[in-house]
Length: 339
Image (cartoon, rainbow, N blue to C red; front, side, top):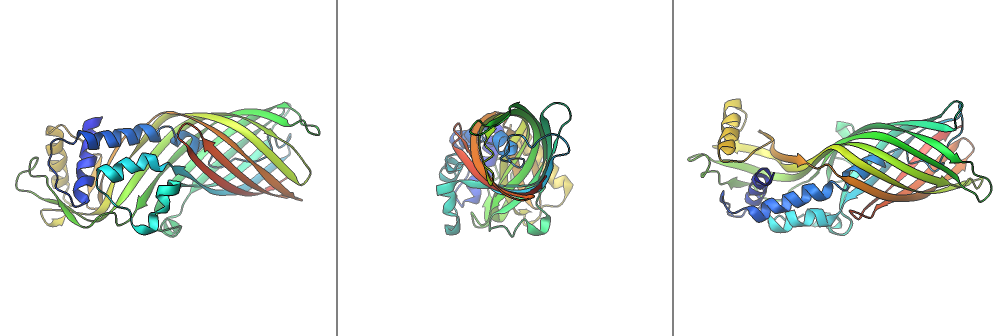
């Protein structure tokens, strides 16, 4: 694992305009190894709480249903990103200073729906999320790509009356895949690959620093809510495990090989083969970038709460979550029609 991450570190270190050799990169490999392991405690909870975070612990038997849309953001803590920035000599543009305070944001956008069940007091929900390509660069200067789908089922254990809350337990599955890129982290620079491919050069031009993530998550949660006429406050706790998760990133930029765009499949394969013979691995390499990723499965636990405001058939939810393991946090707004 460390050898794979070391290659990523070599490329980023060189992209920062510093001198790079093919040896003695253990500390940089450690930084990426830590990043992959730390983000494993964030990905499952981020996936699980993206969509279907409605305040009512139970929406009622069929034909009760709701359909709406959620938008929010969750964070990769800066403590996970900071070792990469420090050890690799990368500097963030000044307009991204908020990342140091708040962390790297991951968007949470979903269309979601719930339907009450038959006979037993349960409901089921589905969610799907996607950022159309024409909007990926317009949310902020951070470029985001995002795809999500999943669902859950909840069983009511206690029917609320007065100050006694409605209590439900549930479980579900979520698939989340995406990337977050920070532009202009380095100037154009040549990567020293002479120890691997003597006589050849590899150059990146004004690269973006990109973080990629993917997770298949199983989730369980317990939630309590109070129906106070106009308001429906709620609290809950959840746990999730990333069955098959992957995290990493790289440099998104124009890649030049011996001064020309790296488009020839034979050249790409020759570079990969040379790195493989040297004991390293590159996941993706072409004219648009270099990326490395690693398995990042892990367990997440989170606390959440918020309230809904009911306006006849319309409900507006405000919710927040906190992951005490990774210290990640986030929030979302949901607007829906609910009957």
